[in-house]
Length: 281
View 1 (cartoon, rainbow, N blue to C red):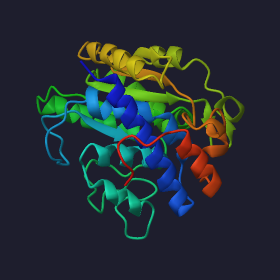
View 2 (cartoon, rainbow, N blue to C red; view 1 turned 90 degrees about the vertical axis):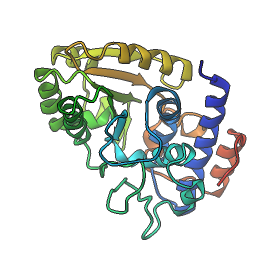
View 3 (cartoon, one colour; view 1 turned 135 degrees about the horizontal axis):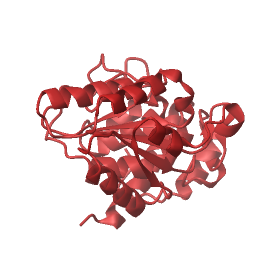
View 4 (tube, rainbow, N blue to C red; view 1 turned 30 degrees about the vertical axis):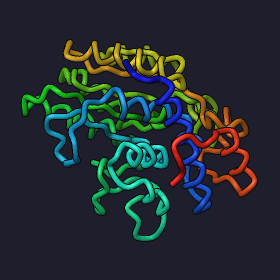
């Protein structure tokens, strides 16, 4: 059984990492990163079945692709605290020649990162291709991916979503972070997307909804359901409802912190709301 308290403690530390990384270079995307902290902690510590070490081909293990690459702070934090690279390397976030660029890249060979991402709308296509590759290799492991809700405004997603269903890519679990915010405002004010559940189902996907996307127990339960629905001829979409900026009160429920770094005072307030649990880098 998963130790929920340990996962919650790790989530708090990940939030501290995010705040400190973005503050240090006065650059980055804390809002969506904070909102997805519980998801990443759950994914890498309980949900995915991975191998020791890291290799790019991912044969014989579950693999993950981050499509909305601007939330790299949470990705890097969880990778480091899962042993993919030294935790103190988080100090190099967004510095020149760092392996931890603002949007994940592959040319520096950062363990855990299989694609460069940040050009929104492309991750779905990559995840589908990887899932089909696993099928061709008779690899029974799953492909997981994460996408922003605003990112679904990119048309390439819907071509890929149609393709996945048409080709019965049923070893894919694509999660959409539904925080209702994007860089210019709420998703409803920028470009309303209507009923995403109905849309995915109309395109031939099976949909699981996790309404408490910042609750670890809800995430584990919902993702277990999603996993149980794989292998049945349809790709699986998880609609994960989260709060942008979760865990830092002045960052929550607003697009203002999509891509804005906290100042010194704001950093201290945010850290005070997330008491140190495992040790800062």
